[in-house]
Length: 426
Image: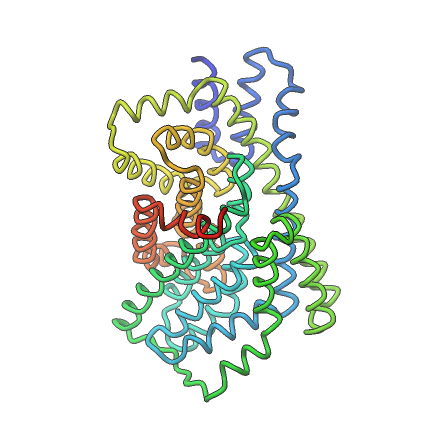
C-alpha cells in the first residue's frame, strides 16, 4: 500500500504548489518507480507503448486539418451557413454559434479549436447586434465543447486507445449525444435571449440559404467525406484524418484559393505545439495509470463503491459528479487517461457497456471545457470578448446545468448512446 500513498501524495503536492499536470503525473510515477527500485527504463518503455500505436496518428492529422480549415476559408463559410440557417428568431446568432460549432466540430475534433474558430467570427458579430459580451463568450465557450462529442473526436480517440475499444463505434455512438447537447444549448439560448431581448437583426432574402450553401458546398462536404469514409469502411479513423488534411489542402489552394504560405506555416506551428502537448500528457498518464493497475486501485475503488450502494443509478450519479469535479481541475486528455483504468472496470462489473461509459466520460469532459478554474474554452472566449473569466462563468451556469441534465439522461438511458451503432451493425 506504500506505492499508492507515494503516488497520490506526490501528485497532489505538485498540483497544490502549481506544477503543470504533466510534471505532476510524470514526477509522481517516477518517484514510485524509484522507491520500488525498478529500472528507470521500464518506466520509459511503459509510457512509450502508450503513444506508439497506429490510432494515435489520427491526433496530429485531425489537429492539422482543423487548423488548416481556418486558413482555407472553410470555417468562415460554415459559420455563414449556420447564421443564415438560424434566421431572425430570438437568439438567432446564438443558434448560429451552436450550429457552427456542430459543423466545425465534425471536422476538427477539438473543443478549443472549435471555440477559437467559431468565436473569432461569432462573438464580435453577437456583440454588434446587442448581445452581452460575457453572454456571447459564455455561449460560444459552451457550444465549443461540442467539438469533442460530435465525431471525429480527439478525446474519443484517446479513450478508444486507453480502453482498447473501437474508435469507429465510439464516433458513431457520439452522434446522438452531440445533437442532444446542442439541442439543450439551443433551448437555453432561446429562453435567455427571449428574456433579454436578444435578436439576430438579420432577415435574409429568399435564396440566401441556397446561395450560402452553394458558396460553402466544399466546406459542407468536408465532414461528409471524413465521416462517410469512416462509417462506410472505406478507411479507418486514422486514415480519415490524413484524408481530411489533403482534402483541406486541395480546397484551400485550388478551389477557395485562400490558403497561403503564411497560413500554412501558422497551422503547422499550432499543430506541432498541440500534438506535443497531447503526446506528453499521454506519455506520463500511462505510467501513472499502470501503477494504479499494478496496485489494484481500480479493484479497491470498485469494492468501496459496491459496499456503499448496489444501486447502478446512484453509482452513475456519483461517477458523473466525480468526473465533472475532476474536469474542473484536470485537462481532458489527462482525465481520460487517469480515470479510464480506474472507473471502467467498476462500471463494466456492473454491466455497463464500455462504449456507453466512454461517451458519458467524454460528455463530462466536454462540460469541463466551460467550467473554471481550468476551462480552456472559457479562456479563449475571454480573450476574444475581452471580459473576465468571472463574468463568463456566471453567464455559463445555465448552459452547464443543461449539459449536466443531458449527461444524466445519457447515463440512465444507454439506448440513446448505443442505438445508432447497433442500428448500423457495429
